[in-house]
Picture (cartoon, rainbow, N blue to C red):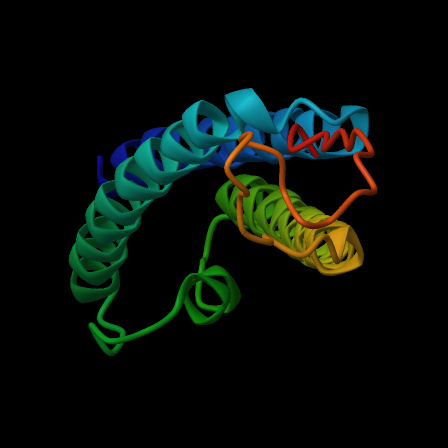
Length: 161
């Protein structure tokens, strides 16, 4: 019975990993389209999925440990090690498929995360450069309410990076 529970746990974790890929892609689309206004919500959603993944990972660890004990293998075995010790070819194939899919999703998540960090750094740098180029002196006002700086130029900042 332990293999069924482990497989169900792995399916839940895979679904959460796919949801995380979606949320990171959504975050990336906001970054590349300049819709930084909504970025905080996308980031919160990523954090919520991460919290669910932590719980799912813990549940998987418990299932792996329980199944390892049933199979007479070290209870601290990893999923990869447990797959090797499977005596049933069907379950070995199923567990291997889960492992391969989760490894691929994890790689995709790392790539998306790294790319999003790059986009964030570019946005921060652009904002800092725009603010630094302002260069307008604050000046002081005279009796008529006019600043000493006679160059009155309008500046527009797009902070929705």
